[in-house]
Length: 247
Image: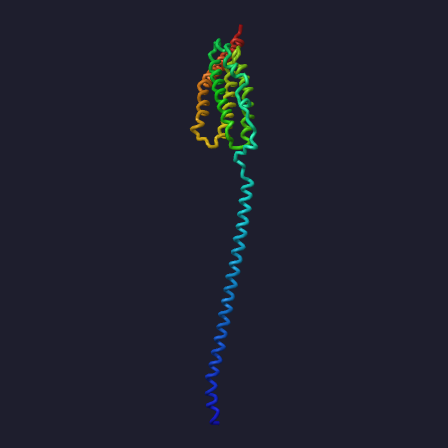
C-alpha cells in the first residue's frame, strides 16, 4: 500500500509531457494544412490571371486585325494609279477658237462678254486643275473620278455657246452658264480634296479665287434673265387684257 503513491506521482509528469507533444504535433499539422491551402489558392489565382490575360491579348489582336481589314486604304499606290493625260482634263477641245471668235464683238445685248469671261475663267481654272491632278493623289480612284467629272464639262460648254447665238434668250443663257460654272466647281472640289495631300489651304486659295471671280458675271446674267422673265409676264398680262376687251 505504501509503494503505490510514489509510482503514481512519477507517472503524472510523463503523461503531461505526452499530452503536450500531441498538441504541438496537431498544431503543426493544422499550420501545414493552412499553408498548403493558401499556396493552392495563390497558385490557382495566378493561373486564372494568366489565362485571362492571354484571352484578352488574343481578343485585342483579333479586334486590331478586324480594324485593319475594315480600314480604307488611303495611301497613294502609284502602281494602281492610271496615267492621267492633260488632254482628258480640259474645258473643251475648241475653247481657244470659241474665245477668239470675232462674231461675239457685235453683241447688242451686252451679255455675251460676261459669258466669255466665265468661259475664260473656267478654261484657266481647268488647266490649273489638270496640272494639279498630275501630282500625287490621296487615293488610287481619285484619278478616275477627276477624269469622269471633267468629261461632263465639255457638253456644258457646247450648251453655253449655242445659247450665245442670236436670237439670244437671257433665261436660257443664264441657266446654261450657271450649269457650266457648277460643273467646273465640282471638278475643282474633287481635284482639291483628291490632290491636297501635303498642300496647305493657302497654296490652293487660287481655286476659291477663280470661282469667286465668276460671281459678278453670273449676277449680271441672272439680272438679265429676271428682267426678261418680268417683261414676258407683262406682255402676257397685256395680251390677255387686250383679248378680253370687247370690240
